[in-house]
Each structure stands twice: as C-alpha cells, then as structure tokens.
Image (cartoon, rainbow, N blue to C red; front, side, top):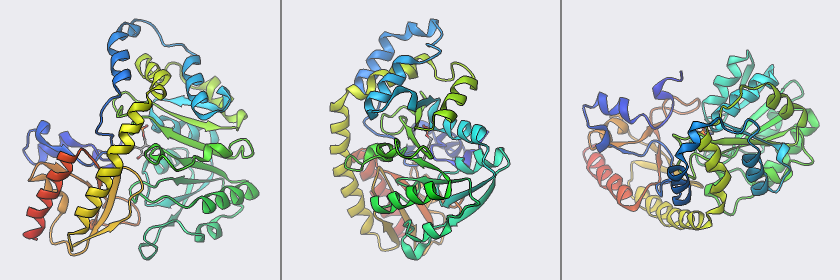
Length: 359
Ligand SMILES: Cc1ncc(COP(=O)(O)O)c(C=O)c1O
C-alpha cells in the first residue's frame, strides 16, 4: 500500500495526529471538484443500486462506447480502469520498460509502477529558475536508449501546462527515437480550452493518453479512469490478460452517463474561473508566499521564509493543505492547495492571515 503521506487527502491520519474531529477538517490537499457528484450520476447510482447484484459486463461495451464517443475515437482505442492509477500500473506491467525518463516533481505513482517492474529511472528535474516549467531542454534529454517518457499535463503538483508546440515537439521526438510517451491528462478537463493530445493518437501509436474521471466529476471513492491509445497490440494484450471486473458496476454506470451532463461542466468552468482568480489574487497578497500561475483546480506556492511547517500551522485551524516536501526537486517550503468553494477558500485565506501574521 502507498504510504499515507505520499498523496493528498489523508484527512483521517492528519486529524488523528492533531487530535481533531476529521469531519471538521477542510481538505485542501486533494484536488476534487467541490460541486460534488454530478446530479445525474448520483440519481443513477441511487436508483440503480440493485445492479450490484450482478457482475458488470465483462467487456464493458457501453462504457467503452461512451468514452470513445466522448473522444471521437474507435472503442478499441479505449482501456478503462479502476481509476487512472490502475492503468499506470497495468501499463508498466505489460510494457515492462527497461529505462524511463520521469519529469520531476510529478505524480509519485509513475515511479512506483515502473520500479515494481525493475525499470531504471532517470530524473529530469524541473528548475525553480524556470518557474518549474517544462522547457525545450527536455528535448535534449531524450535519447535512443530510453524506452519511455512520462509527462503530466497539467503537471501535478506545479499546475503548469507545457505549451502546445513543445508538446508536439516531444511527441515527434519520441516517435523518431522510438520512445513510448505516456501523457497523464488527469486534470485537463479543468482546462476547457486546452486540446487533448488524444487528438494525435491516430498518427502516433507510441502515444498513451491517461485520463481520470475522479477529479473533475468528484468521484475519487468510486474509481474510474481510462487510457487512450492507437497501440492496438498493447491494448489488446492488456484487455485479454488483465483480471476481470476490476471496474465495479456503479463506476461503469457513471462512465456511461457522465459526459451527458453539460450543465455540470459549465457550472464547473464558471466556479473555477471565479475561484481560481479569487484565490490567486488573495494568496498573492501574502508577501511570504511565492505563487506559481495555476492552470487547473489547484495552486502551487513556496513559503519564502518558513520558520515552521505551514501545513501544521494550518492544521491547528482545521485546514489541511498538501506539503510538497516528498516530491523530487521540491522541499518542505513548497505547498499545493486545491481550489474549493468560495466559503472554504475564504476560510483558507482567513486562516493564512492568522498563521502568517504570527510567523
Ligand atoms: C496526476 C495524477 N494522475 C493520476 C491520478 C490518479 O487518479 P485516479 O483517482 O483516477 O486513480 C492522480 C491522483 O491524484 C494524479 O494526481
């Protein structure tokens, strides 16, 4: 099991450590849409609970069709999973890469999945002086000995999105060098104007695009994600050999209907546009904090003169933020906060006012 400190969302453990009632802690450490479960999905789950009495369709035909329609691609380019996390591990297990390049800091599960299959990992560490942006420098780090490159767009925890030209150059360079390119777009739904690299799959069978449905649709407890690729050899192999029924019937049901709810998407974009601006403006007022421009539903910042742990100080006010101390390339001066409802965001700002005025 992953150690509890490796991810956000550890409300129970942190509340226990600080002797707090976990239900009173506001969790800014997991980046989940505060609009909650889309109403149509909630209604479908409640009204169709009895589907749990049957095995899910072993082929998940309707789910494949829904995901394929959403991305305008053939259904056999889609591989759904029990959260995006399962697909990171499945991909590594079936590809068995010998050498990988990881852009750091980023999501920790790439490393765990690759290490599990004995893959040697090179780190491409983003530089603070570049604002942690992926720059063209990454193209020089690619070479013919590499089997794969992982890139997270927008990146977690830094929140940065490489520009489209650079991403295209990375896709091309990986194709020339025969490097499999694993692109994690788990947070891209929060960027309505950002095109997905899934549009380039047809010409690039070395490209694998990962999507999560747990963040945008607020379903982290249900577990649903998918991989998109034109690499039919790999996808067919995984489909044939993986364990059956890893996606539960309610998650499959959710995936079959959640793209229909455009009202929820529009409400999410509206909330995010307002609250991203609000939190960015308010956080920028704190002189000890250096803020990095956000692109999705979370903000990344550095505490410039820390005398104590900001995470611990805020916990005393019932607010849990993500310490980025355990990311490669970062330190205990870096933090990430989710963008939440206006009321919660105000609570964060008020708590920071108290904490930083004493710091
Ligand atoms: C960048 C990134 N990719 C993938 C995941 C896994 O998402 P899921 O809940 O779909 O397994 C996370 C979860 O935090 C993440 O941050």
